[in-house]
Image 1: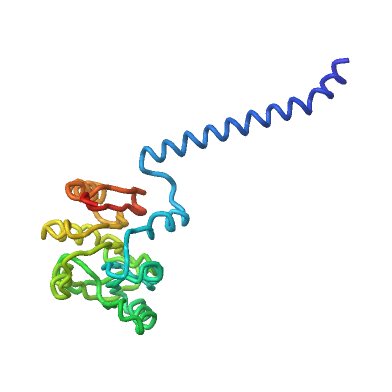
Image 2: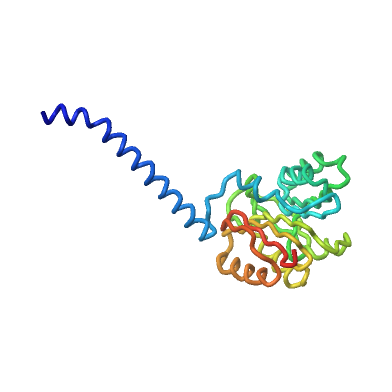
Length: 235
């Protein structure tokens, strides 16, 4: 009798066990997601790009800086959404030429074929597609010019920046430090930055900059070493 009864009950037991596993899995995933949210480390995906990196209070009068333009896709997307004025900076000449050709008929997109830093200089950059960096040690190099961000702001008579996107593979520390030192940081409404751990003491330097930014801005999202955004406190 035992075997027939077990055979009859088995499908019901399988259904119950399956249901328990699904519920347990769902609860575990929820807890994990909540934990990631609490830590500011929710796994990043392309969905986050649309929900976070492009949603800003911009219009045709807004001024946007794109530091690390690469091939110009982020600039193209932001312009198509808001028709704002964009200053795009790309030091690698191959990509700077692509950007030039892409926006040559768009008077609201101003292309600069050099990089942005804390001072004027020429330095070698290691070429690595969209990961080209001054701080990598291996690979083909190209000497590129960098310009002091405060000089560029002054030369173009820019009183405020509505959004600055910074993805310059390690150069973000110097640029943000320069903006903070010049006290211009309070004139930038949104700072979208990707910090990189390519440099020595990157964790400490990132924390120091975050502490300074917190005096004038609020952190609106934070995916460490991927993307984070700081919004001016009076908005």
